[in-house]
Image (cartoon, rainbow, N blue to C red; front, top):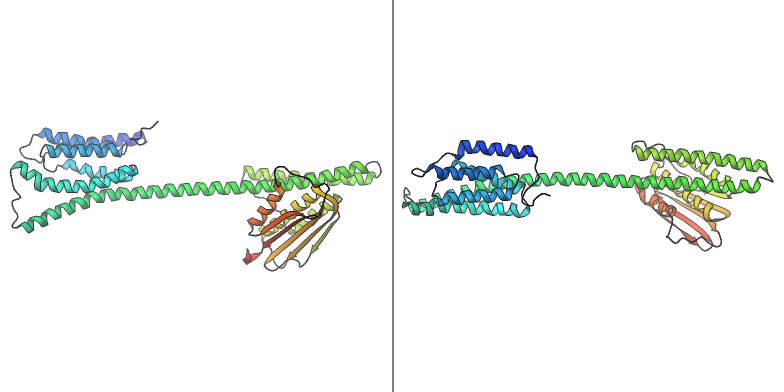
Length: 393
């Protein structure tokens, strides 16, 4: 388990940081710019600054603490600014780029406090400890201008380092957000595709089995009295089962390979659908007025086919075997449909609420921007839908 103080970074990055810190110490950590002060003081400060660089990406908080320890040690030893102090810029950068939110804002506070501390140490503390004054200024105004300039330069450089890190942090977060959004979109698309395939699977299997069951019952009763009718029923069962098997194989192929979309039903397939229902022994009356004008979007054609397929399947399974009326009206901006069938007595009851088919009817309509309703009205079960066409969609 990773300690909260440390980040998880590749071992190669840690080795590189340690190697760069070692080179930094050799080049800059041994330089002493404080005349009259022992070299060991500069070495100690250089070691601390180099250590802060070595762990800056592994633990920005620890690197900031070590850098502050080096700065306090430097001031306690009354040293002038050293080349190894450059490490402070790198530490402030990583606090904003890779630290936690608390470490990030502590880094900004450290940049501001550090600039004030540097200015106060150079122009107040250090001269007092060394017994010297701020000589070389012709007037207090010139002294104030110089001190203010040093303070502004220190504040600008330290805050700039922190700001660069904050910009990198923002870029990292933006990339992570884009990746998360892309994953969410892929997951949503996959879920929508699974839902579509599930609806198609239900429509195909439920309708085909309803036709098969109806034909099988008819063939069983007609086998002795009318062998030709039984043979015709068996032929219809065979054709329906083969078509259903082909559709199921296509849907399974889509589950394995999403690019294999395959052909979808259109308005031209409605006659075959009606023929299957009539072959199952249902008296079906279809009224199309007005007829389709111009090209109908493929999505609307598919929705109309699937809604009618489910409505007729429902009539086969739960109807009273009486007449079924289908009315389609193709207006310039919309299409309306209605399917009426008698309800078997007693009406079937479901303890788990509406079935998948009725839910699928509503979802099919919603997918193309329309709406659909299905329910009992007196002794009839009625399915109605209104779907927009073209610009209305």
